[in-house]
Length: 75
Image 1 (cartoon, rainbow, N blue to C red):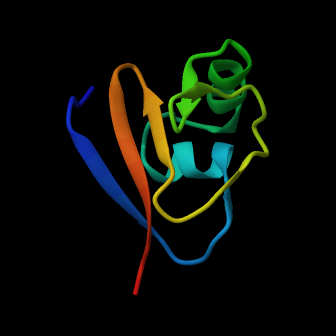
Image 2 (cartoon, helix red, strand yellow):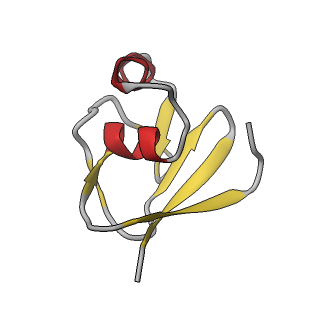
């Protein structure tokens, strides 16, 4: 777990929430992402998100286990 904001660069936007969780190493696989999202353990921009297919965009903040990752577009 981490406590500060961590910027995660992605190649293209938008990116689905489940894919982002895997990319940021916040979950081990898609099944874990699905379960954690469905259980309300993931927040997007401070709001609990229960849709694994939620489209994320530049500077969205994803919070899991008290740590926050920010979606950043790779240049």
